[in-house]
Image 1: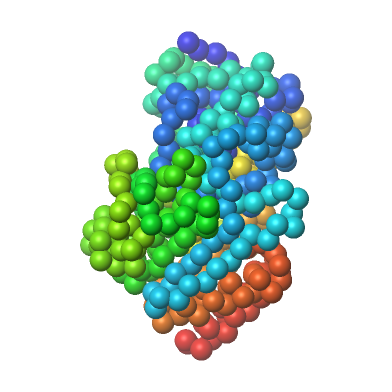
Image 2: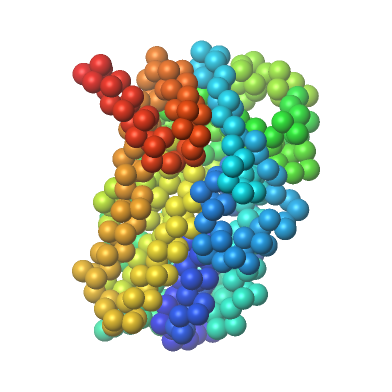
Length: 403
């Protein structure tokens, strides 16, 4: 198998599919390839934030309909946060945004909804599964992609191939350092001493892994997505055994009563998540990166689906402009970087600040309580500008008192 394309998208996760869907009516010859076949397993907390839900109709109205018709999605009332000094803060999702809410949905299912939408609504996009990218060669104004299914030529490449992006490595984009990554460990349980109908997503802070946390998210069919996330450098420097920390909390710590009769129904699996950082190069002559390949995840929660979808949408619009104007230079593609950081840069800086402050055990309860109060006071969303500015004010006051 081989071919000549205007655009080849490497990776068919949320950012890759969002980009491909955005190019459906562009008139461009597009291929999207993935090393796996769909549906495929993906390690994730399976939480879908308000930001994710609101982007679905911006990608496609039919995609939004497909999602809301899916029976396996599980609506959440909000989040409950348990601090290291045993305080509990509840942040409900206020139902004043039409029928929108936060949800949990197995990540393989969510990704497959996007993938099937692309397959069913694009007759001109070549979709290639089980296709592993091995090498990229640059020849004149074309890229040659050497894969397990042949050689593909393309004028433009989108690297949507995740945290271990082959596209990024082959095209020599700057390495994402370990200090800008978190590691997440995840498994599934059933029979927790917790009512699924409660439906709150729960976060448990633990002093050993601050500013990381343990999560317990209810899903459909009585399952609970359970995991732990923490800084990769912190884990290595302090030789933290994440599995031991999680099992200790379950057996004798804050989760003991909740897991008293619990049964683990899947093995533990881990993944690396690159965090968003303002100004990191994510494009070059004839190519750009999206999603985890670009490193766009929230520094506090590790959530990356929202910005993955957003980067795919921005990438599609930028690529259409590239072909309309005939501009593929590194200088022109910096407009993509500029637009990404215009939309996400302040968020990255804000969450980096919160991440730093949350690493101090003595500030844990205060910060969580202040964030919850600010959110409830403004009746906004966790990422709305008014909430950010209010909490940023308090964060700056805390830093001033520390120095």
